[in-house]
Image 1 (cartoon, rainbow, N blue to C red):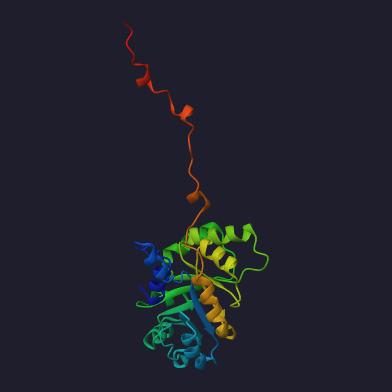
Image 2: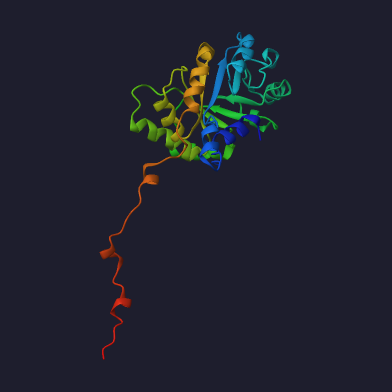
Length: 244
């Protein structure tokens, strides 16, 4: 399992609630969406800034020689070449995962001990999305949602998440408000991918993520079907009286 996959798993796992009101009040809220920063080939020096700002992962564009230390952040890379040898070089240079497009060479995915993320830029039918599940991807990156966000767009996110059976990472400019973040999370998103220009916004973005309500709260969780006493059936025990 890659470090990215592990962080996604931990972010999606609800922490058990502690006993006692005082303990609950002191309990910090864990971030339920990852924040990932994308850097161009010439922005390697910003990796440390991204990690210091709280980025969970940093994605570099370029070859293995351009990879820089990302501190506590998980290191990913978008390779210039997608042959197996290039992917192996990125892994050996410290990349935990690589980001591939549909045009990437299939042999790249034969390499082991490295995770794979698909940068999905085209629409796929249900059959193709189901086949993505066989690739055991760590995640799928999707373009930012255009405003206004409609129910139809959220259904499309859920379709991709359900059929591909992979966590979604949705691009954003770092300014997503709490409502959009919650909508993304409840539709299968495991994180947001922001450009290097949004590093200064990471603090506020992470605060909004940490303040989101508990994952998976549904309206039906608060509703309980009550059956009127008259509709629960006749209690024949009441009829057992003495005929004498």
